[in-house]
Image (cartoon, rainbow, N blue to C red; front, side, top):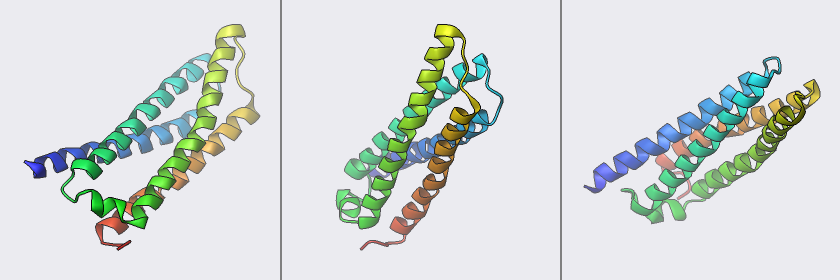
Amino acid sequence: MNGIIDLVLAGLHHIGILAVFGVLIAEWVLLGLPSSSRLIEWIAKVDLAYGIFAGLVLAAGFARVAWGAKGASFYLGNPVFWTKLGLFAVIALISVLPTLSYLRWRRDLRADGSLPGEAAVARTRRWVLLQVGLFAGLPIMAAMMARGYGY
């Protein structure tokens, strides 16, 4: 039974990771399009999906630590795990900046119909691209852990 639980948790974790990456790419692409009221509303919804999938990644990841086949000691004693978790936290902190921009843009759009300026969009797009770049480190660290690095 423990093997099935581990399989389900690993699957949820991996699906969440792929979804977060897909949403980040979607945000980056959307920010490259000309601003419109429809785009501003849409990107706020996409960013909400980002938060939901990031929550799934965390929940499934912590569940794997607690109930997965490898056991908590495999993860908690591994500095690569802590580095991976720290990198995820850095990405999450960076994600606050685009989220606040999207919320402000949507608020301004609804209040007076204004759209964000090109500079604001370009700056936000760079923050999203930084997240994408940092995100690439996560599967590298996962592969390191799977091969016994950190022990």
